[in-house]
Picture: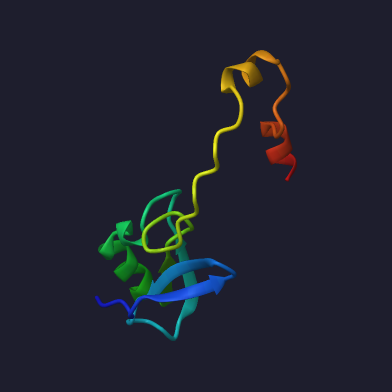
Length: 101
């Protein structure tokens, strides 16, 4: 099982590293999205091969701040985080908001 050479998709200053499995490139596209802060290389080879054997054209990428993709600077902390907790404000985005989305 061989992967293509790593390439980059660019949007402004952000570059996302990606590659695709060389076998099964004529099939239905299947983009593997790894979890937060984990490199695309964590996808098990046997799973990728099984997808290709099932007729998929398998591609994977590194999300921003992971693997070989652009890492953005961490935002500077502002104020006292405990003061924000003590203020008792409601959540800016709740689980109900997410369910509605």
